Length: 198
Image 1 (cartoon, rainbow, N blue to C red):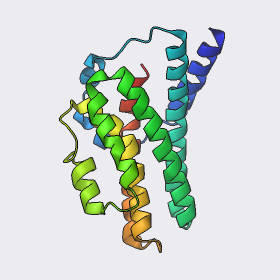
Image 2 (cartoon, rainbow, N blue to C red; image 1 turned 30 degrees about the horizontal axis):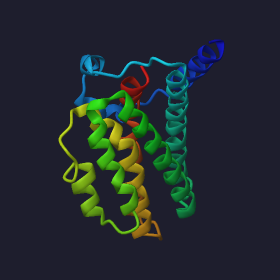
Image 3 (tube, one colour; image 1 turned 135 degrees about the vertical axis):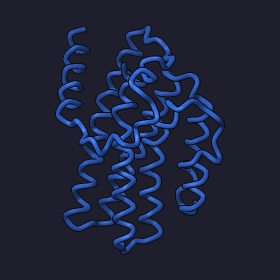
Image 4 (cartoon, rainbow, N blue to C red; image 1 turned 90 degrees about the horizontal axis):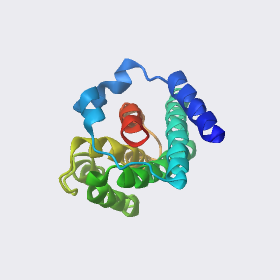
């Protein structure tokens, strides 16, 4: 049990150290603090589930660190391979966070499962279709607002990969788009933490 407490303290320290600037939370306004507290969540009953929750807590903290590194890299002279590597790591972490959320937030299961279909389409989906079907939920079943926040941990990094695919030279508009995608997803991570960890 001491290992779990130590890991939890480390995660809480990382979260405090990474507190997002106010502008990063602008997109999180769809759920009030009370709404987040009232969301129905599956209980953590087993030691294995407790370990999984702690692993996801660490992953979410690392996700924020990687997102900030990606943003910093945009200011230091963008490199497509570096952006793709970081966005790919965020996409992979987002997929694991969504898998865990499908357990914790049963009401989001079908919605998140359908959202994960985007992974197979990244190589050929257009930006317009991605926006319509996955950002604005055109291809996804109806779901409560908490599901939207979790989905974005996956959809925004996928969008970065589509942006770099379509503009390998990384023009100014592409860099602006990448920055907007990462800023927005970082604006969701504290809500996601409240939803799937606590």
